[in-house]
Amino acid sequence: MTLIASVGSAQALDGREAGLQATHQALNRLGANAPGLALVIASHQYRAAEVLNGVSSLLGDTPLLGFSSPAGLTREGHRPHSVVVALLSGDFQAETLWLPGYAQSGRETAARIENHASARVERQSILFFADGFNGDAEQFCNALPPALSVNGGLSSGDLHTGSTYQIVGSQTGSGGLTAAFLRGGIHIGVGADHGWDPVGNQFRVTRSRGFWIRTLDGRPASEAYANLFGYPARDWAFPPLSYLARLYPLGMEQQDGLVVRAPIRVEADGSFRMNAMIRDGVDAFLLVGSRASCERAAKSAAQHALLQLGNAKPRLALVLVDVAWQMLLKAQPGAEIAAVQEILGESVPVAGGYTLGQVVTPDEESKPKFLNQHIIVIVFGEPSEEQ
Image 1 (tube, helix red, strand yellow):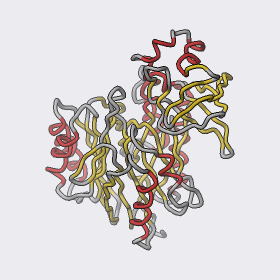
Image 2 (cartoon, rainbow, N blue to C red):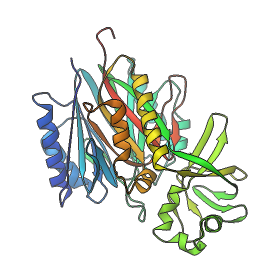
Image 3 (tube, rainbow, N blue to C red):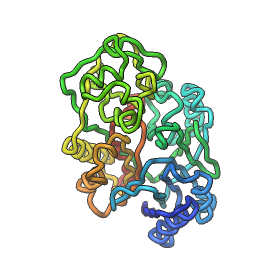
């Protein structure tokens, strides 16, 4: 059976109406085909329950997975204050799972994912969305076995309050992880890249505690950035600088290449709030991004996704982009989607949103990797006849 996809998006005053309009649009484009999976990207400004109410009123018991984002992404580009709904129909099975304990233990959540997956013997791919402010995504990735294909992102929202939400089936919540187990006639190709490069400035992480970097080179982290950029250290604790710090992440050389770690915000005491732990004594480079390098990275991610797809025909692209890209491309909103579309072609529908971290499984031999600052392109493909 052919794999068919459609995307709808809508902007409205309340989440229910936006969800209703976006779903109606997507269903119309799907025609007489019954959806087997729905993906929902909703503005964090809407209430999750209202969005779900609008979407599910038209989709019934269709397996559904979603997350909050500052803006949605479609072929038309950047969609602030919107709901985006992507539908997939075909000869495949989707089973969804809600794991509310992710914020308490990434390790236990990974064990539950593994147990659920091991109950089935056939090949499967796992797509997930988790809370971007609470929970340890790196611990989650490290606890998963290499043979499991797990890809997804960390939902974003209000950087000031630290609130995001996740949607699955008839449930919504914060601090959780939502997953879809995909089996049957559906193939997935994934590519990832980032547009940030070292600029020569190097720091030593001299004190860190949990998700907080307290000092760089023996000084409060904000003071180290103040000396570089010329703004007083105290200004980094307040908007807009407290959030714009994400534009200037830290890069650490490790055995498998450059690892990028970006602040979520700068705290009142000058420390950087991260969503991955960085140990004391690590040397880190300052990284800076540009529009040109991000567009190259978007094309590279799309090309790699198509390469992984092999002979399968691309039918839908899910694009998960770090929130830093939204800040960097503010003058050219949607530039990353245009770059992805250049590689995929105009006929492939696109849905996506901005995230506080991304997870990809590079190959069958590797464990999933937790990333910051990346764009990941997940292409759903229809298997060719010989497959």
